[in-house]
Image (cartoon, rainbow, N blue to C red; front, side, top):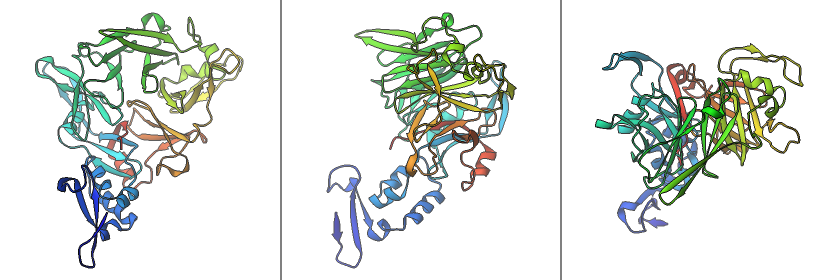
Length: 428
């Protein structure tokens, strides 16, 4: 409400937390500040070197400032590109980063610092690639005295931690960890790729990790390369290098938990890429070593990328043509079991005005058509290059990729000096 202070200056009272009349929950803002030009508000926010926790406070000052300042998400977490080699107590050599992590907002085109213990935790995990994100939280490892390194879920702003069950996998390779959004100590599900051929998962109320072995289900040299937790049905989806998709359903009955692992219908029995994918993808699957899963408007998509080198494919069955696949070429396929032939995946030419973000984060799709999110383009796949840490944007219409902050204020300098780790979405 407005209150006249008896002079020419007007003040606006803004409730930020508790009930009206409680001093600690009320901020009084001079109208002259509330009516500040939105461009000036945005410029000041960019120049103030705010932390990730300070920006939401600035947006909450008053309604005009909230309208002037866009949501920070999508963001990516990045670190110093320089690394140096160190040796641990056992004589094993590994790389250690340059000593800091921060976030970069695509909508604001500015960096926002991670601070305090969370910054130290993420910094300690970056070079071992043990950072995951989902729903505004991060998954990292923390030293727990006699237990050694253990997985935790932490919120970068509040600093709140959720301790996951004791990790008994030692130094086993963990390709990616995902978890349910809005986790709490009393309600969470976490899942990870472990050693390329297993999914491990943990749930609230249980004191250990469980293993889903897929050895007998994988074809030859095939291995897991992505995992996704789908909030819509609470299931875990994973995809292999050959494009085979598994669905893990978790159920809890009192003190007993059960799981069911199945191939994505109609992939019954042995997985046959020649029949599951239409030409030319029945051949191209073999030249796209990196694959991701993402849900968009209820539809499941696979995102394929040639992350190794330029190759020329063998003639595709039924198609008979060879295809040249350049490094970082990308292909997007939509799950389409009703297409009328043996195949159950179809080429996708667009994402219905959405943009998707894939990588070490739990994959996210957002509405981008109509300028809803500044500088986020519809029908684009946002990904992170593992070789040089560039945050990239793939345009499905032109089938080309470019750095997603190219041309942003300070963006090119930031890309040259830093490495992106994963996408991060802060819940408003």
